[in-house]
Image 1 (cartoon, rainbow, N blue to C red):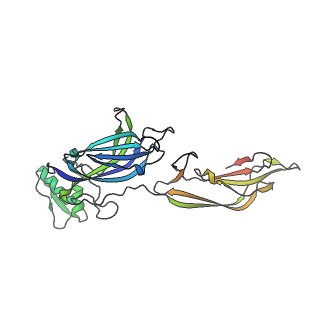
Image 2 (cartoon, rainbow, N blue to C red):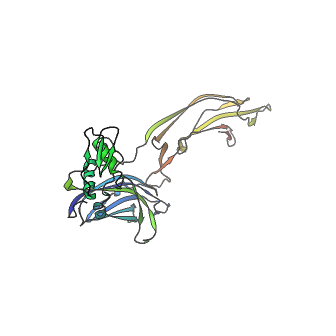
Image 3 (cartoon, rainbow, N blue to C red):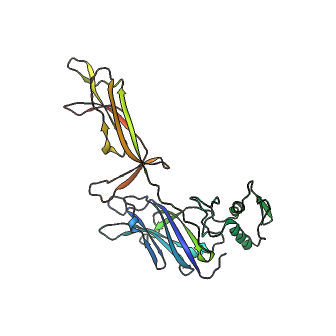
Length: 345
């Protein structure tokens, strides 16, 4: 166990996203942001509110210093941003940092699955796996772990643990993951309101790391910033149509259609495009040699398109939608004195 005396610690709070928040605005949505309180320290991240959503993706990390056990209650609140009126609290959750810091299961910092010294999953604890394993052995009354000469075997608690490839830290981490310590994970915590204390106001996905400064600086923090959509352009070439329905009759009584092709991507209906008209097709064949160009924003990891637009002309912020990438192509019959006739898609 860590020293039970007063400890100055670095606290890192990772806020991933919220789920199923209670609506606060007239449109049935809210504009949530995060507020964090730890003793007299307050972080109010009002500038990074997420507009018009009940399932915001925050992707934010906050770092604070505190003294444990005097400053142990970490309060994480979700507020609804309002321009003209006072911001309303959606809900909050409180975490006892002292309980985590003194836990025998190492809940102050979860144990990762793998040991990396570089890259996005760099080891972030202050102690290496071999040092953590020595602490666990001392707590359980075991002899210190002994590493074999070839670096492929560690004797811990009277049992041998081996790996095919040499690596003391990797092998120590493998043993740690069998000792019942808290693994690296994302918590899903329920938000509650003081006005309705027994009713859930939504969920918050997050995790907290606590590092005592007496052990030195911690590893680099994770970057959980939301992915940025990449800009793409879809080009569609319309050459010909064949066997199109003949919807009209010419003055000579022959069946015919004035064919044109229309296309768009769902979510970008304001960018509908159409070809010129192939007049008086008697056999359903149309010739165009026409090109459509559709710019769009795409998230490759999620395989979804990101669409941002204002729901109403008086809306202050754009609302983001994630929709599957689709292309709709339709064939129409052109009419001069009535509405055009839809032929198929």
